[in-house]
Structures are given as structure tokens and as C-alpha cells.
Image (cartoon, rainbow, N blue to C red; front, side):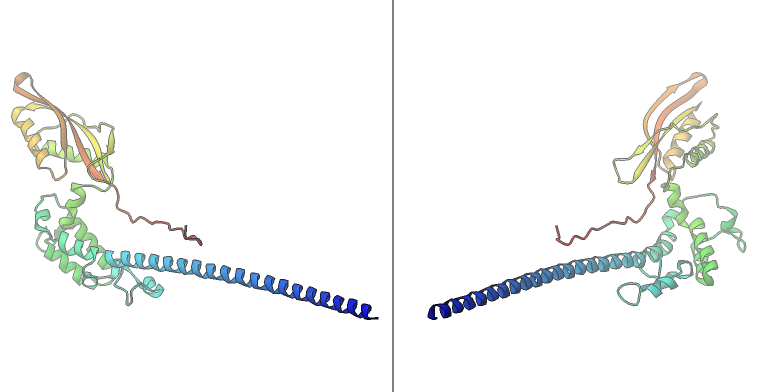
Length: 289
């Protein structure tokens, strides 16, 4: 009888141990799952925080570009709100409302630059003041801009400043795109002003990127002049005085018959790549690698 009681106690102890082991195992599984979920949630929170920080950085960068260029008025806060961007109308903004911006500096400083404005140019009929029958001065153009009402008048006044002020010299001196026809027309005008009429003009057909300045591109031009000494020298002097750069790299000058001076030269003209805002893509990884 005592032996049977001992066996029963042992069985109960063994069963209790099994329940305890199962309880410990279950608790371990629950604890492990909880720790895994906590780690996962921490990683998700950290990743989302990185994404939100990158988005905020992009918003600030976009806002700074808009504000610094003068496309819109300065925002009330640090960045533009969606409502401010919807209400933004570049053609209806006056220069006085965007001080210190790129747009204001161009319209106030470059457009009024006396050195640039001193470069002579045949003005179009739109640049003639009907009251004075002379070319618009910057003061007159600025008054037209300040007196403009509404986006239509402001846009027209802005275009008038671009076409008739000192700003017109900048694209003439260094165009923002390749235009061989305009280049040859400029050369032809220089030849005619020098008293020489070329028989034909054509590009050399080669162009390349300059190694001097990033974004600066070169167009090769062949020059050929066969005229009297005075005319040939006038051509060289006018090319030297031209607002657009013609860099003569190789030249051959020979005396010809009837006291003529023959010029064969290879020159280079330049133009810039169009200025654009480069967008970059930033990849956010959860592990931060």
C-alpha cells in the first residue's frame, strides 16, 4: 500500500513538472514574440522618422528655391503652405514685394547696368518710346513696370525690360543655346559693318564642350576674308570689339594680288548650357546602411 502511495506521489510530481515546463515554454514563446514585435515597431518608428525628416528637408529646399528666385512672395512661416503656393502668381508680383531675390536683382541691378546698356544695338520698334521717339531709358521702363496693374500688364512690362534694357546684351554676349544661324548672322553683320560683303557663310560643323568652365560649349567657325588691307583690318577690329566672343585660334594672313590682304582663320564662339534646377533622389533604408 505504501509503495502504491509513493508511486502516485511521484506521478503527480512528474505531472506538475510537465505543467511547469510547458508554462515556462509558453511564457518564453510569448516573451520572444513580444521582444520581436517591439524590435519591429522600433525599427518602423525609426524608419518613418527618417522618411519624415527627409521629406521636411525636401520641403525646406523647395521653399528656399522658390523664395530665393522670387517666383512667389516670402512665406509667412519657414516654408510655403499649400494655400500660398496655389495663390502664387509670378506675373502679378512686383519687384518691391520680393527684395533681395534673384528676380529682383536682375530687374533692378542688371537691367539698369550702365556698362551693359552702353553696348549699342539696333532697337526694335517696340523699344521706341512713342512720347520721345527715342529708345526707352531704364527709368522709363521701370516706371512702366511700377505703374502696371494686373498680371497681364506686369508680364508685358517685364518682357519690355528684358528686350529693351541692358538685359538684352547678356544673351547676345553668351547665348543659352546653340544657334548657328544667329552666330552666322552676327558674323555677317560684322563683315558688312567693316565694308566687306562675304560671298557665303557656313558653320564648320564641329562643336564641343569647353574644358575651361563647366557648361560652356564651343562652336567652331571658319573665317575667310579677301579684301584690301584696310577692309581686312576693319574685319579683325570689329571681331575684336564684338560683344560676342570670337576666339581666333589659328590664322593665316597673306598678301594677294592687287594689294589685297587674304585672311584664313579658325575661330571659336561659345554658348552656355541652359540653366536648370537639378532634382536629386534620396533613398532611405531602414537599416541605415
